[in-house]
Image 1 (cartoon, rainbow, N blue to C red):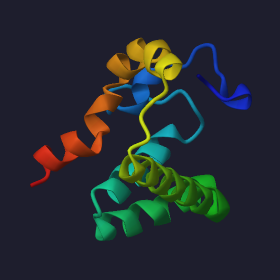
Image 2 (cartoon, rainbow, N blue to C red):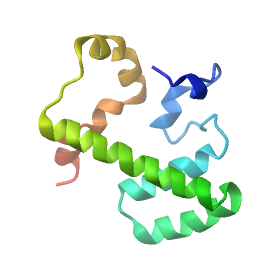
Image 3 (cartoon, rainbow, N blue to C red):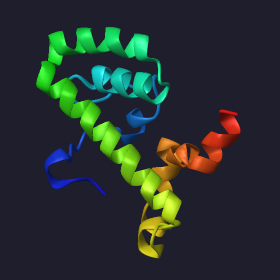
Length: 116
């Protein structure tokens, strides 16, 4: 389930959702920090993180990161709003991946019970 160009044999996919695991990609800690501040809508923290991430990654890479995060958020919301479920093959083939990453905890129903 990886994009061809992003496949890394040594990658620990659980680093996506577990802050105690260092992401095995360049500037992974900045990618996580930008994403977490964006999800939390902590705009003051995001401004500070952006400035520091830009010094390391460059302005364009930070902008690209935030654009991708926004696009995925929008795509997920559209899919959820229209009731598009995972197809049977994807649901079956991603059971372990979803369990390892805890990604099911990001489902809108789960989020609504956590953030009331």
